[in-house]
Image (cartoon, rainbow, N blue to C red):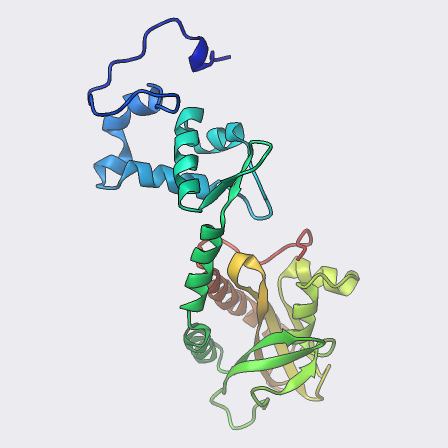
Length: 281
């Protein structure tokens, strides 16, 4: 085990800058400082201290309320003294808070940053282009539904090119338990039962004539900030034109659109937005 810096008998390494004052929170010389000349962030013109501070903020996984100094040090691959100085600086600006037990949590400024991002983000400007692109790709009408109490509401719709198509009025309340858009919303809201478990496992759901005779739909979930369920995106059309094999084939392009929307609305990137059977709200 590496001895703590307080128990070392060897003198500290000489600093090149005399302006840095020694003190209890001073940075110990270590592998990271020795390699600073080869630091990729520095060579690319980035500010290393800022990159390290962002490492601390990004160390928290979804659902983790607090982390110890040792765990932050391990996850960021930085010395505890470095982490402590960064955390104290972030705390000074409200981005981190130290609890009474010594652990650290994200501060209110981090929440306000996310809120300001969300407030300045026009969801309609994200949904409409994505739905238009999906309609162009599949040749059918597309729509986006959100939950409102015990119902679902269509907040955006793009009509397909065919004269014979499925019509839904924007703002119309429809049942959650009939039709694939509502069932997807229920499934990814944590609704129990084997049918909803199967939807969570597949990541999408299709239905034919469930809410309206002669209408076929296939839907997938879309997530917003903090990967909370935002709604469901849907492809719909006449059952005569969209038999089950066609719906299954369309599911892949639908999932691609759903993932792209989730990344845009959540302000993040990744490889898959779809939750598996282990997903819970």
